[in-house]
Length: 199
Image (cartoon, rainbow, N blue to C red; front, side):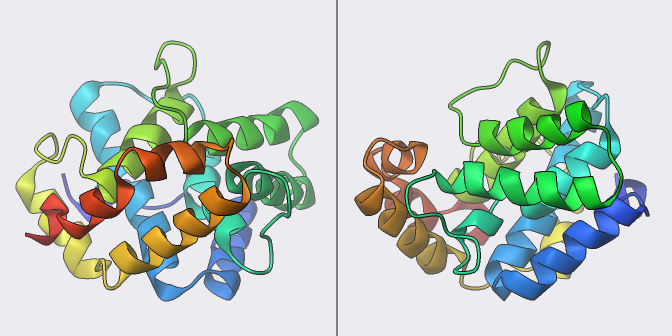
């Protein structure tokens, strides 16, 4: 598998999502979001879990962490819900039907779940395991090495570890009942500091 096999869908919604991510995300968060799309495509190929809506998965991947940015950080809402709401607004502007917009919110929210059943939600499952790979190193050996190397060369990790640890620690402190608090308590900082994709 190559990056060329996993191009983002060229649609108004995906282009708008990319524009939002480029405008509001830091470089590290933007590259993480783009890598998450590629990892989701890679996992789809090796696990045979096919997204029912590839465009929706792309939008969700690009916007799944936009709720961590100062422009969209919510006072009380979990960051993934805030990001889902951005996805809803972007796809409403692209003319998506209401039910499909709600699916963007669901998929972005579910990327923070401990596990998403692929039979119930293939897009949510793929984004959850893709982001888990990029953040905690889960299933790091599951994807072809050549594909992983190509993605990392095109979209390097940079300073993601310290930046993401800081963002999530802030979320956990302000929102102690959130999924962010759960993963911080589970050792997020150590996982990012010793990430297999950086060895």
